Image (cartoon, rainbow, N blue to C red):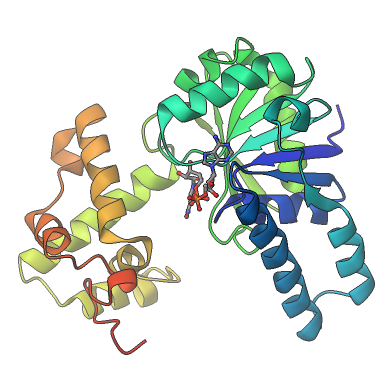
Length: 287
Ligand code: NAD
């Protein structure tokens, strides 16, 4: 099945980027949000990003116009918005009951052939899928921020996801220019689970005085060719966000590997959340 009409639910940080890569892949992309102002600002951010591409010589002006002509605001009624979709990608806030209620609507309102995807970064896909009544067509499509620039798409399949759904999601992901990996529905998927182990160990090493945050990051950047060390990355993601994921994985997977180090709890309780607060493992106040 060829995917031509994509509807993205939630036009925030992730949603507008997903609509952009869908339009760049040649699809008609519609953005839906409970807040119409977010749809408008999402459309404006897509236009601004493409404009930047034109000014840097990376996007042809004609391509920019064609891509923009393929993105629009969806109907304000969710059921109407998804009625003709080939693919729906949900990118609303990370709350299981909210996502389940949306998938319940999608199960009855989207076409019986549509692929229904969630961009959740941590919730169990199977719990979201079961609310739809058509779990064979539900898959995790975990994009990364900023979506137009991050090369990875992590597809998450549950025991009920059909092979056809995985292949359709893989095909559209590749058309969007992404390298696609397929992961079983399991806590932290592949990315958060591995990334967090490294981040938490780096924090424990700071706690134990093994080396400074700068030197630990340099070890991974120069010794292992990571584009960014685990502590700088933690500062960018947000220490509170990483603490939340660590607590979740400690509870559902293993509390020895994922128990949040004391230094992480302390910095979060002091309001040192990383770049967004000006201080984390690094001082960002000047940047
Ligand atoms: P966000 O808060 O920036 O955007 C969410 C949008 O959803 C908001 O504009 C909000 O108005 C809208 N919304 C709320 N309820 C809605 C509803 N019922 N119907 C339609 N829209 C609704 O959030 P985000 O950072 O874009 O995250 C969205 C999802 O993507 C989450 O599941 C998150 O875990 C996941 N994710 C985020 C990142 C990231 O770096 N931000 C990376 C990967 C995955």
